[in-house]
Length: 176
Image (cartoon, rainbow, N blue to C red):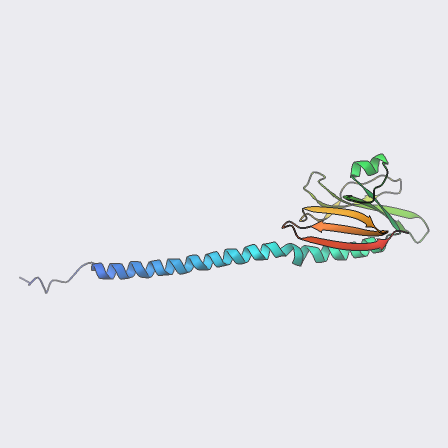
């Protein structure tokens, strides 16, 4: 018969279990801190993504399109434009752009901040040769919370408000 001291132990002592649990808790706290840090980093990255990805594209497009327009008119809505209502000079979500063709004729297009059924955004519309406004074929961006055009001292200005309240101003061309 074996003595009680020579019997092999099975299981862990209370000290060993306490050390294992403490090590596990320290690892869990460290992991939680890393996860919280990553979440904070992603929030900052998401908040800046409009400024780093959308604004350069919008600026490039507005510079090229508005800069090549011969003239423009602002309207309170697409419906006002289609109805032939008088243009406005401030707080307008719609701008009608006129372009002179090489043969001397004019064509037009429309930039409008609206929801044509697929979500709010800055949409581009063509006006055909018969003067009929086309559908919102494509959106320049759907990220802004608001886009407003105004004429200030004869200069076309666009105020673009981002999803986090940031405001970007574009100053275009003088109306001819």
